[in-house]
Length: 102
Image (cartoon, rainbow, N blue to C red):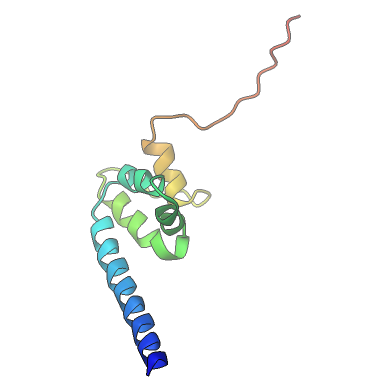
């Protein structure tokens, strides 16, 4: 009896996770790309979710589509990288400058 309870509780946990993920995805699909970036930076669980191309690409595309006039994501960039390039106020490019004096 206890093993069937254990299996049932595992199945119910899996069902709750699927429902939670489904509702989360519905909410996330209405957010701005910068909001998705901020969420991805909030905790490890969100980072794993938002940086997983298979799980979140549809969300990133929906978020990008909500921004009027924003061009398509270049092929060489991921959706999160494109969102960071366009909306993140910080520069993430490192330029090596020779600082030696003549």
